[in-house]
Length: 278
Image (tube, rainbow, N blue to C red; front, side, top):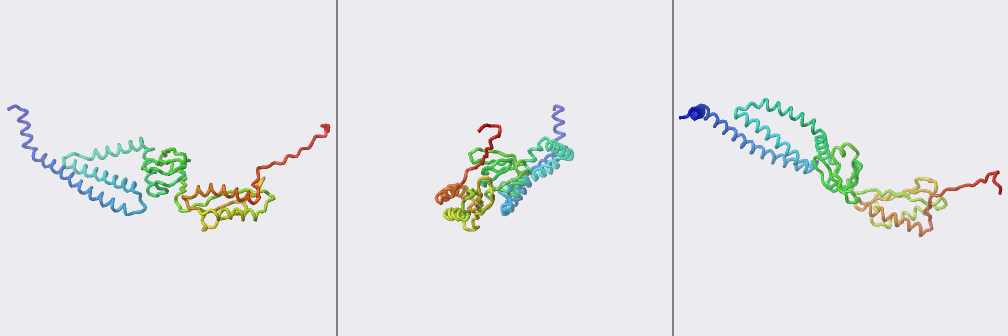
């Protein structure tokens, strides 16, 4: 018998049983770990889904992170059953994590911002918002970025850190919105009559809400006009329809009553010089 075959047989006799037991223990750890992780993930997802504060995306993200973390622990336990020293591995993971964290700090910043957005929920998919200097309807929200569809149908993708680090205006958060208009009338016009005509145009529009009550008041003595602030309320979905309709109907109502909406005017006074012959 060749020497290397004899050595192999001797090794199997002396260590084979221990190796087989270690491999069996490793497999058992993986099987039990998979069962436990599956059960924990099911319970976690069920519990998180009952919380209204957390979105579906955030629930799935938390569940995924917890699952991966538990698998790392299971693998560590399994490797220790094979007699592998996991101490250096843990230390190496720490160093690797530091290096990766430094290299991907912007991505981690987006991830952290995405987590805060999903946790605090300043907006939802389908809301019309303004953030990071861009306005549009939220089409997609992930852990890394938010995708908006602009009013002129452009797809805009914004990193989450740019959104969470600035002001977020959500135009869809409330059921109603106030429509702000400014209407100018001439200085010679009857203010009371103008207010009555404008209020009539408001009440004639079925999309204008009676509660809160619309407001029509003088707001400014401008250079060429007396400006009236017009503030009706409408359902959020009807905002632009009311805005456009009122501009049209108020102009027609004032014209019908002979109330002028003045153009900007400037008075120029000419004083001929005494040196210029008449």
